[in-house]
Image 1 (cartoon, rainbow, N blue to C red):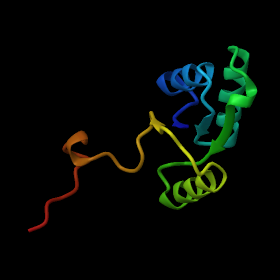
Image 2 (image 1 turned 90 degrees about the vertical axis):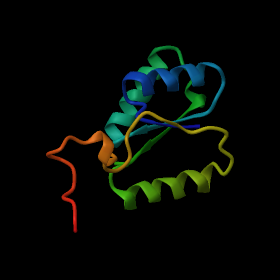
Image 3 (image 1 turned 60 degrees about the horizontal axis):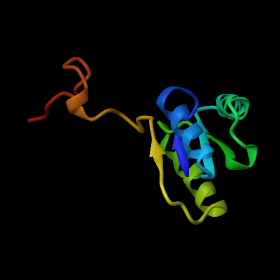
Image 4 (image 1 turned 180 degrees about the vertical axis):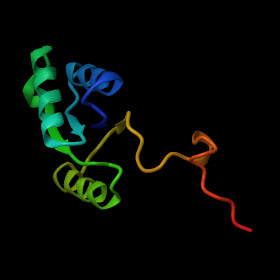
Length: 106
């Protein structure tokens, strides 16, 4: 189960709980260092290492995000659930302030 945003906060807790309950968790971080550090903290918190795999990709870059998806599907063709605690790509207009909203075109 890929958990995007697993390096801290809700994503890290989600990864911890799922792995403790026996799921194979694919720990995602924006960088390899962040993903490895999160995996180390999960192991230190008592998660069994065989329940963890580490992936790193900046999901705001569609090319690298697509490459990660291909890598995950290539090595783990059966996924039961995907947990995402990280925004992928630009925020929808309804979540941006007026200064960030794109200009209207006539």
